[in-house]
Every structure is written in structure tokens, then in C-alpha cells.
Image (tube, rainbow, N blue to C red):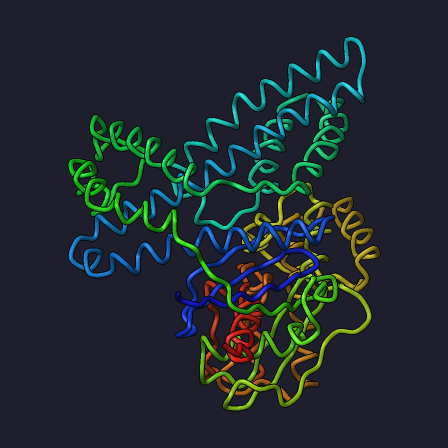
Length: 460
């Protein structure tokens, strides 16, 4: 039986899981927001990684066919998108039920009737929108969390209501989303994937009557080929789908890391520090890495590594979470936007407003003052993002500077405004010739390092 190795990075804002095979290849990734329940978040991330691993193994089994027939790759990606939608749908159904319970326990009389009608109208609008985006626009590939997907659309709809309804509608949202987020929903992979195939048939049947020239659906080469060929592709790979649905993914060893690693039910020898794991993971993806900057939910780490990916020195913030993911989450709440909207909004700035406060609480007060004197939201956010990067640059300097190659990891590396300032300031201070590595898997580097430690410490 093939052996697989699991790394869990239990962070304060997100929990990540990575599964690798015996050749150190990543075959599964899972991520969720941590919020209030660390253990549920860990289990959700682990299960997501196992689901993702099944799709990766399917692609590996069909590697030759995918190379000669690109429509196979598109078909499998579409199955996974629909699979993710069906997972989302199960949780959305629970959220709607939870809304009913929260409304019944919070409001009475006419106000209750009004809130019920508003909520019903909102979900009648956003549920079909989300379904369309998952199935036709690959929403599942954007790595957005359940809360973010719902809240972005929910907030947009309540903004259309009168101002007097903002507080009660947000109250009922906050009371409803947390219990659903903190509930572990384990899915039957086999049941869900065959349900996904039925939805996919519906999608492709719809495409048969769609003109690519006038459709709002993005048609690419693979989509065009599948338009008249999906039944043949389905017949060719259904046997392989059944195989990966039934196969046992044997996790031979696992290692935990991250801010909450002490909470993981792992033996002491299977717990590693975040610094070791991030350095090892970054070096595995970029073998010439000499300096690593990791900005996570609760801390920022500047790490120097040797040619084997082992840590030679490091420096990290040791006072509070200002300048980290938690800080950005708090700021997003202040602006009533999702975390994913922060970076794009900051990137629209015409200038950078100076933010003097380094404390999360005082920064929020300063932001409100700046808004009151007429500063633009985008300009304030640009200044805030730059101040975060300035603090990180200070840590890098104290750790030994930036050496070639430089790798940026952690969840905050997904924020495009932070990326912009990191690139600008690293080049300004350490030279334009320096190579900067940023990977789409940057948020998974700690979990990857953990999985690699798990493989190396495994004894058959």
C-alpha cells in the first residue's frame, strides 16, 4: 500500500493541511478559517486535504490521457468545482436553518416578520448566484472560506435595506454563522462525487445550447471541446473515478505545527516549531532560498536558512499581533468588508495615509478619525498595508537582512497590496537583482514543512 504523510499547520486565523507522497510531491491541500474552534478547524482542513488528494491521484492516473486530450483535465477540474459547491451547499442549508433559529430566539412580533422576510429574500438572491459562480466561474479555485463567500454577498444585500436594519441584520448573521462554522460536517466522498457528475451533466447540457460568442460564461479551448464531447470523456474516466472514490489514503505519519500546535492530539515528537516548518517548506519549493519572511495570523517571522533548508537565525515579533493576519482581519471588520477585499481596495489608492498607531485597538481609533476628516478608505488602507510591511522589514534587518533568494510565505502573502509593498521595499533596500519567490501555495508552506518532517521521521 502506498504511504502518504500529513502536515497540519494550526494557525490562529487559518488551519492548513498538506498531504505528500513518498516522493515529497504535494497531492492534497486543505484549508479553513480557524475562528473559535481549533479542533474542528483542524479536522476540516485534514478532510479537505484528503478530498483534494483523491482528485490529484485521479489526475496522476490519467496523466498520459490529459497530456494528449486537454479536455480530460478540464472535466476533472469541473468535477472538483461542483464537488466543492455541493460541500458548500450542505453548509449553506444548515446556515439557513440556523438563521431561522436565531431569529426566533431574538425577535418578536412585526420586527420578527420583517427580518424573516428580508433574510428569505437575501438567500433567494445569493444562493443561486453562488451556485452559478461555483459551477460556471470556478469560485472553488479562489480559496475563499465559507464565511467570506456568504458575508460578501449578504453585506451587499443588506446595504440595499434601510440603515435602521443594518444592526439587526448583522446581529442575526453573527449569531448564525459561528455555530455553522464550528460544526464539523463530514461528507461521503463517493456519494458527493457521483452527485457532482449529475450536476456536471446538467452544466454541459446547458452549454450545448449556449453560443460562446454571446455567453457570459468563459469558454476556453477545453470547454469548447467538451461542449460536444463530455459524454465520451465521462465514459472514459468513470471507472477511474470509482477507483479513487473507494481507495484508502493511508496516512503513515503526521506532524503538527503552527500557533496552536500544542492543542493537537499528536505525540511530542510529532510537533515542530513554525519557524522550522516554514523554512523547510519554503526551501522545498524554492531550493535556493536563503531568507524567508512569513507573515501569519499571529506573528511575523524573518528566517535565515542554509543550503539544506535548516534555520541558521530568525527574528519574530514578540509583543502583539499588530501587523499580522489577525490585525488585518480586525481592520476588515472595521471597514465592514471581507479580508479578501482589503488588498484590492488598498491597491486602488491614490496616496498612502500615514498610520501612526502600531496597536490594533489604537489603529482602529485612528482609522475612524481619518475617515471623519475625509480621508479615502483606499488611501487609509494603503498606508496601513505599508506600515505592516515596514515592521516586517525591520524584523528582516534584525535577522540578518535579505539574501538571495528571498521567499515570502504565510497567509498574508495572498494580499496583493502587501505583496506590492514587500516587493518595492525589498528591492529598494537590498537591490533589484535579488530574486523574490512567491508561490500560490505560500499559505501552505508551514504544513508542507510539517509533512516533509513527517516523511523523514517515519520508520516502517
